[in-house]
Length: 332
Ligand code: NAD
Image 1 (cartoon, rainbow, N blue to C red):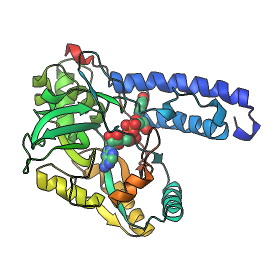
Image 2: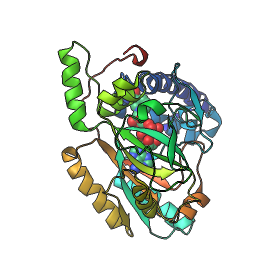
Image 3: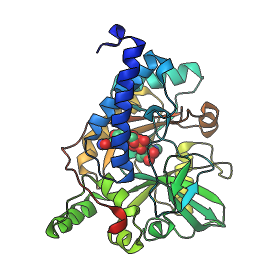
């Protein structure tokens, strides 16, 4: 129903329905790595909820998917509190919306035109904590405040250094993903064994990482790109692009395609370039992330309860029709 024709009561009822659907889909997706609908269906439903809640702010409820980071934690894993929350990202689906986001930021907060463009890796967020340069704990994002301890599983991944090049205390965040080649051979093997294939590399990565037996994770050939730190006070750089280079120097794998953009044209060109190159990349991406490059400005812009105000994801249209899979992780 068009928003201008709807009463607050009708909006509240529709919003309650949408929330129930979204919460069910989130549970399938995050808790069981087994979605029953396409991401685009989830995204459209979410957008409608945002529209209703924006028009009628009184109908917003604290448990709305718009107010919380989506993941849940699985029983069987020790819970890890995130002192600095792990957030989601706001998203846009068109160049116009992307331009509006950048314009608003650049105008209202005197943010100079200096953005870091990165690929949005289609995996799941992880956090790695090092003490004196030694990996002591690895966890999932969970609900942003509390994640799952998956240290033993993460230690099986070759791109994650057990020891850094410097003996520092640092908590590094990034994406764990399954390369397309590993995904193809895993699904072939599953089909040969009469198991349902994974819906997509993201769900395969999530299901592989949240295993009680690290030997299963080890066989799944996962990889990582790290792109953030919980707190950057100990870093020498004050830019996002510099942060990536510092992470690389510490021994992490970063995605090398990032680019600093000083104009909207440069951002658009990056988006176009990787939308075209997407299919040929050895890993899945579902969009581009644009980040304010200055770290002090990131800090002063802050975040909502769910997303940072200094970054936005430009989401690509869905790549292909996905199959639905079910894997009960703790029994595999
Ligand atoms: P998101 O995946 O849209 O974006 C946030 C995440 O992007 C971050 O947490 C991080 O893990 C990741 N990311 C990848 N590359 C990054 C980079 N370079 N810099 C920063 N972050 C990067 O948000 P979300 O909250 O994780 O998930 C919401 C999305 O999940 C929805 O838009 C929908 O597409 C999908 N979803 C689908 C279903 C379903 O049933 N199909 C259900 C729930 C959610």
